[in-house]
Amino acid sequence: GLDMGKIMKKEKCNECGHAATVTRGDYRFDEMGLPVVLRKVEIVKCSECGAIEPVIPHMKGLMDTLALAVVCQPCRLRGDELRFLRTYAGKSAKEFAALVHLDNTTLSKMENGDRVIGPQTDKLIRLLVLNMSPELSGKIGKLIAMMPDIDDEPCGDPPRISINPATMHYQYA
Image (cartoon, rainbow, N blue to C red; front, side):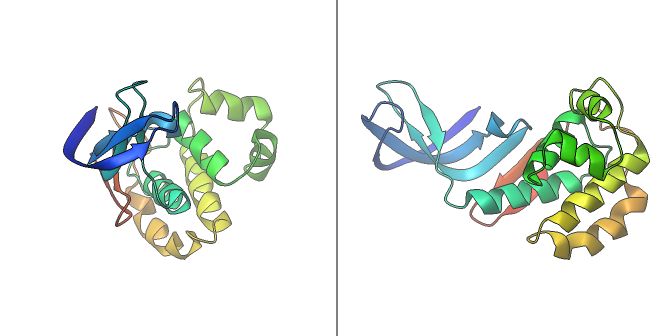
């Protein structure tokens, strides 16, 4: 959903080029393939074509924050989270499968939710992704400290991650 704040300014619509209204509010950022809400972002809404888009000034920082939120969540990884982390790490399915000693078919089934990600594979993926990211490798101690408390079962409902792009703070909603 969309939580519209007060009207701030006008901006050109990226879709149709007409003048669009810019407000501040919360935006469901489903484009990542994960349940993510961006908090307190500028939102461009075009009354001409109906396009609604968030303004994200630091996309790389947002991706780093989202990857850290996924890696540090308290439950077993789900397939869509595995796919996001693999993509974040910049690896093809074949490359990533080789890194975690899985065949391509097994990795594909895990990403599509047709096969459970085992607890050891889950932890290996988290450690691997953190270590492969220059921006996140300094957080490895945080992950190691929480590893004994990560539930080997998935969360009942997928955790919705809420991120404030201005501060890059995240929380599980």
